[in-house]
Image (tube, rainbow, N blue to C red; front, side):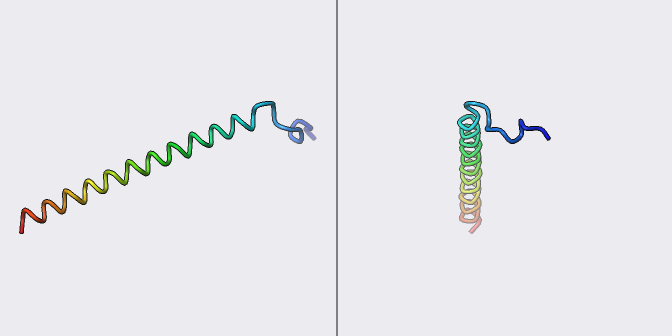
Length: 54
């Protein structure tokens, strides 16, 4: 059995992993905000087109 798997993580690993997770969450939030912004712009354009056609 490999005892390396049972030992504690290398120094600094936990902080490094936390930073990676924060970067992933931040990018996910930016992607969601960008998608929402695009959808709102689309709905406004559709609404404007409906008004013009009435």
